[in-house]
Amino acid sequence: MWRTVILYALALGLGAALLEWLHYRHAMRFLPTEVYITVIALAFTGLGIWAGLRLTPQPAPATFERNAAAIASLGLSPRECEILELLAAGQSNKEMARTLGISPNTVKTHLARVYEKLEVQRRVQAIEKARWLALIP
Image 1 (cartoon, rainbow, N blue to C red):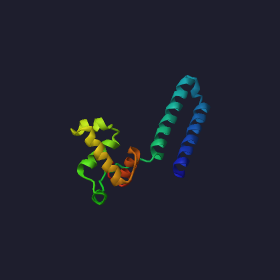
Image 2: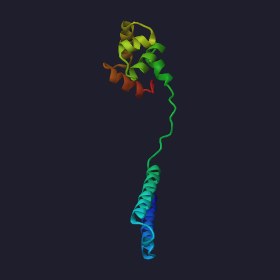
Image 3: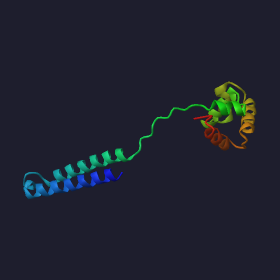
């Protein structure tokens, strides 16, 4: 990081030196001040974008791998895993029932079993624990 900061400072210093050189060469007589201000603004914008891209970490695209061992140890059925995914997507019981083509009461039954197997009481707790166990992305 310090290397980037030093390079940024050197670029700013070189830009200032270039401006002074232009001023001493009487380049101000040929072009209006607005042109120089625009050039400086564009240079600093480009430098800022470059520094931002260099300093901001780029996350590696992670591929999600479901934890089959946790699913087996908890005894989750494939339908309960689907319910967990829809739960994490923020769907209500009725929406889950429509998506899966089952009744809302069946969704409630599946949710109760999922809560019991994950040892939680609420939706948010179930989602957090499922993500922690790598059951859902």
